[in-house]
Image (tube, rainbow, N blue to C red):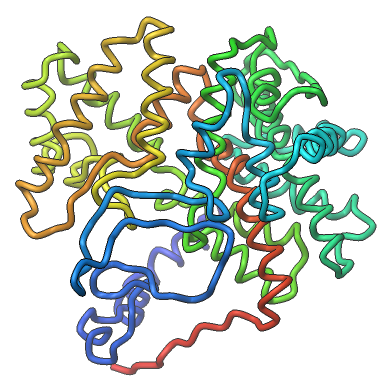
Length: 439
């Protein structure tokens, strides 16, 4: 880095701090919702959607009362959707069809959709070599963003208007995202870490989850339980209500008239933020710190003592947080965490990781009560989906660098659905207002 520029930037920080701070009192004085959330932390309505819905509270006699969480895709409860799958059936593809087109596919429609996705699991000639391997990065999200923007140069209709064109681009990117993620990791793993290089082509007849594991592993093998577990994780991460930061980013950029590649690159840039897509990484770092400081992971009282130290800011990153607990929307329960926790338990037992499973279950049981004790008056909390997803990925042998890219591999389905809905129904640029205040 330019030493002079670095020194200059550091010297100017006091001026930024002096002139860019907006006192909290001004938000209350002018009735402005900070971060598009009201005083209770509830998101301010900025649009309407039919793609998905979340229920975390019920109205009882005019009072907003917490309830067990529900997540619906196009009006279908996620529990019913997943429970409706056969023991060996992988559901990412039909759920993607549901989100994109608003209805569950008939058998023939699902078969055609799977075939279309399979035929799209390709990249332009020499793209892997000339783009992905050319500038390998430990930050695979940056690698994916660069790849998405570069793919626009290979599309003669990149800027062409029309719903069909955007749908074509979205479907192709849904098919390509696993390749961009896994190949980006392999390039980094080889050029930056000195490990062996192998690039496996996807099998057009396999599902998204199967292909992800097949391309990632040197021997291309996986068990049916592993594929089922990853498929479930992808389903649960593909969409969440429309109000999350990256989905809102997709709609924001789409409303400006930008092309599909720009919208998805912007969404990737949002998701890579540690406040959004990296929460499961913090969970796993916290778990590792616990293991480093607690000799018996199955000792419930020792785990409780460690959690108390976390809350007191005396352990891990001294933030006073128990990562993986609580959610901006859910209170009593996160349905995604419950579903993912069940399959994570099956996979942990199959791999002989019972002690780890006991540790996670103890934290899930102890943390809500400890949080309620230390923060009276705050809403009830429960484990969120990130609490289990990192452990599941570790059980699957997925490296840390791919945790957030795997999230993106699922969430691009939701982004695509919201882009299409924005193109069909809105017609106006999203333009929030800011009030100018002076000292």
